[in-house]
Length: 342
Ligand code: NAD
Ligand code: WQD
Image (spheres, rainbow, N blue to C red):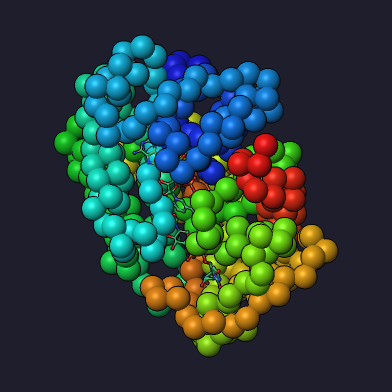
């Protein structure tokens, strides 16, 4: 299995840290590249403790070509899992150039360094947002990419196009475009989890911060959508399931060339109020909320048809909403201020 190391860009981040742990547990040798712009080295210390061995860690930027060249020269890297990037939708509207620079420019630089080093296998963290606004659910990979409603989403779509063009130009490339739905939850140990800086943009970290007393109440963005209870419906996926989907994709990529596109979700949608209820049940805490206006750019519903991932990757999400909430809560309760409180 171990024909080389796995480079994980953004490996200190929320999803990346869970990925690094899963890779170490599966016996891979791992090198992490992260500039810690949105993460803490403490996450990697905890990963090392949980795994019983440490990944190599390089503090640096995917935009730094000389650093990348050194990295590929010094380590026998066989695969790249590319998580590094900026991900705040609102911030991307205010500062689009940063998003195009880090997400698109950074990926181009990374691919140039990979090509120079002869490393041509990459798994990219894409997003369901690339489908744009689609009237009919579920979303499946046969649908054409749409028009994402913000620069963050457009940067993800651009990277998909860059990687697709690259693979078309050179048939030695193996590329997985993994379109995540809504990753939530945390490792069951409660030692690593999602630790957003400032006010959380996403629903579940907001809920857990209310539960732990850091925020007073949740605002529910809109209760007049054409859904069962009027609130937005999403396909939440446990981060542990998500990283197992990456391990499956990696195995498949080792046997095939070209580009594969896979949605990673459960195939089941939950409304905002159903998530609140599931959290209350898992935690025993009440989550006070008020109904607020719709958030611009939000769609009513979004969930996946998980068939292609099941058929081609032999992978399906296993953990339900109760586990997602219980694990998110364990992490937040043990680390009320995330990685910053010790
Ligand atoms: P995150 O912010 O926790 O992780 C991203 C990591 O990349 C951070 O550790 C950050 O410090 C690092 N980073 C950012 N810019 C960098 C650069 N130029 N060079 C080196 N490191 C850099 O985010 P996450 O939730 O773990 O997301 C990981 C990936 O998955 C991102 O590409 C994101 O766009 C994508 N994604 C996330 C979600 C989600 O809801 N969390 C959904 C779909 C796609
Ligand atoms: C979920 C639901 C909100 C916060 C975003 C990005 C997407 C992807 C994942 C990743 C919606 C509602 C939320 C709150 C609320 N990106 N909500 N009150 O919007 O589906 O997807 O994250 O990198 O590109 O757009 O996720 O968690 O923000 O929202 O009522 O305080 O919760 O309206 O219905 P979303 P989310």
